[in-house]
Amino acid sequence: MILFSIAALLLGVLAYGFAGAQLHSGSRHEGGALHSVEWWTGTFLQAIGFLATLAARHSLPLLIVQSTATLGLGITALLQHLQGVRRMVGRDWLALTGLLVGLGMLASATLPGHSVSTTPTHLALLAALAVLGALGLMLPVRPLTNGVLAGLCFSFGAIGARLLMGDPQHALWIFWQLPLTSWFTGILTGIGIVLGQVHMTRGLAAHDATPVLGPMYVLETLLPGAVGIWLMDEHPRPGSAPLVAAGLALALLATGYLVRREAD
Image (cartoon, rainbow, N blue to C red):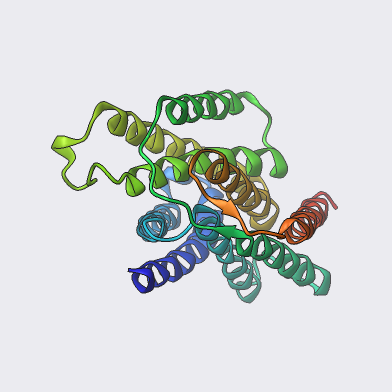
């Protein structure tokens, strides 16, 4: 099962990487994103990425899945560099590498937990994050703002997906036997995905991909990872505090550079 989860995770990384490039091009379509074939292609690839990482979450810790999925950002940046959409210079590649390495350090510090059932605390957290994501639609479009908002919404979507896949008492495919808590979790998961897509599309329509996707991936790693430790019985490895601190600092510094690069 672990090998299947790893294979699914790698497929998700590739799908997310190609999706980022397609979504960025499609978001700038003169007729709007919804009239763009590239945007719909990117959305389809993103759905494949989500389903693949959903399968990976069955056996792998949430933080490992989320941080590994950020490798898709590197694929997006490479594709856009080769296509001439955004030329990356030496410092850009260094910052991107630092971001991916930092998130990898965070992932390596986490141990898997036991499967948990959805509780009212989980639902309250998902609902609160959904409200924040909806309120964010009123904020002006900026790369950091929209990246963070997209990351927030995709994060609670990922948390909900992990709860659905990891429920030891209810098999997801026997949907007619699922309790109301599972249905509410599924609805909130869908809301997170839709809101995340809206925030990401708004950001990509006005800015380069990397400054938007960078903050998005950072929050998509940190928030689900924190919730995994807090509410899903996942644990940091003993003595890993320096690794966590170094990985977090590296990821945040690299993201800050990429966002400032857009402003320049």
